Image 1 (cartoon, one colour):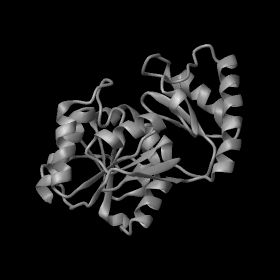
Image 2 (cartoon, one colour; image 1 turned 90 degrees about the vertical axis):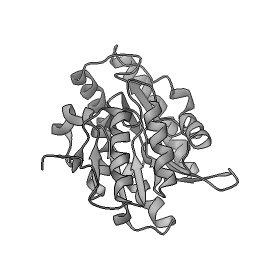
Image 3 (cartoon, rainbow, N blue to C red; image 1 turned 45 degrees about the horizontal axis):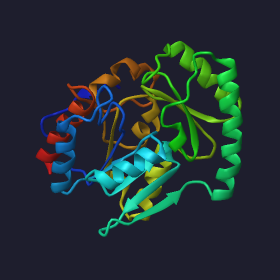
Length: 256
């Protein structure tokens, strides 16, 4: 079904807003002040925003300590982090530590194999701050044709790994989890029904989240990737990236 333009007043109220980060909250690598203002307004309106990102543990630690959020899901569902009223952090991992250690060894071997086989493959700048996955840069500091990105992804999938391509990265990990399974686990542990939550994102990396929730939104820059999605968003914003997020926030707040 073709996404509809997001209305001025969102048709349903929401309690939890899961959101992608890169090119959903940000735009062209920066966080617009409109986005940060929207995060504050949503918090004031009683809507809990939870970033669900492929970004590294290092980035996640920075975000939860400095942004107006109290939870974050990182590295494509590998873990979530909660912050209590005193600022202390607690962690939940989708995979036990012993298994993560073995998986990490396999991933390092695969990373080297990819770098040996594909001259255009480059680890992401945040790779040193990752705990559970490897990632290759395709549209951040290095430009890689989408066709070449799919070749790298296919090579990684053939090794038995989970692979997702976002607008900027290829993320590769071991384990039976993704963004949606960990988002659902967060909801269970916090005793919140799935119907009380929604999602906004921008790329095929968000497909599991789009299929997991009834109320879904894509920012405008998702349009080139619609054909790659198994479950397109229900609504789409007029504006790109964080500006589209701010547009959606006004729609949600109007409905609250």
